[in-house]
Length: 283
Length: 135
Image (cartoon, rainbow over all chains, first blue to last red; front, side, top):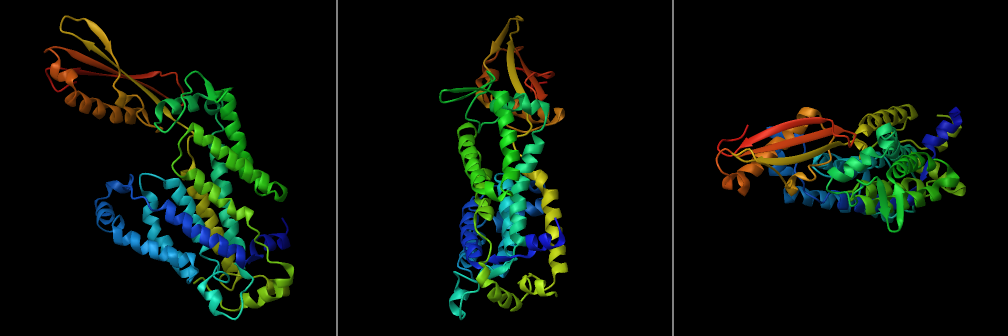
């Protein structure tokens, strides 16, 4: 990748409208993903002070009420960068509870990256007050981080499964025996789905291949939509095999980072340049 | 800022600073990505129980439901025993097996396990005596 290409990859202006859509969707997703109050997980639960803080402050109704108010403010675009960072700090302790750690980590990373953007240039209270909507919400690199996060989720999972034990199906069989959230018993070494009877080793190989494809496919412009469709189909199929708490939905939510059109139309670029010289700074 | 750069927005008014933030977050994300791995490894555990009466007659009992699916972790051998043994003790204290058993009856619990395999090649035996607090 040349310097110019790298500059475009990281610093191309982001469409303010797409940023607004993502902001509203992210607010809704965060509200759904963080509403459950679980107990703190180890090693955090072993720290006495932490347990006190969780039981007396963090897992209390007022704490969640503040988060709710801030999520609404974030959703309507009220100083989304400041509110986004505060939300990140408030939600951070909730990422170490006994359930949903992976999906919450995923969404918090997305929130942290997205909070860099001026996502209030359209469809926000700020946009209503100013003389006209701006076309850019800032450079695209925060969105790139979210896209890379999605690649990492599928990538590390595909890599972790590149073992003979996984390809042989032994791990899937073992998990179907051990984990209460498995909906199928693979002890006979076959996956039974409706009339389909698939050897478990083939199912395991297919899982690795699909995850590897999902890690790469989104980066190929022609394959973005087919990859998203395959991803959704994959997760729907998985739902029939194993009940996943939230990671599947959180991952599919991040598809938006690839599916939304982030490019500012060419005839709006001049306005973009003016907009971006107005006020910099993170918050 | 170059002419080209003039049309490209930044977050911090400096591309260099933006790049530093980008790379920092990227490194952090990569380091934390290990935590995002799911369903890639498992320790398979099987628990069976045999009752040995005072007259030395042996009978295999149905494994209680609570031990059918002990969980989906990827545990070290010592962790398997640490996890299952207290569950056995709890079960024996609260079940009718021990309260109704004649003195001298033993319950032999066999925990077998393997990591990433269904061939359970490791084993631990725990004997609970009806007239004592177990061994």
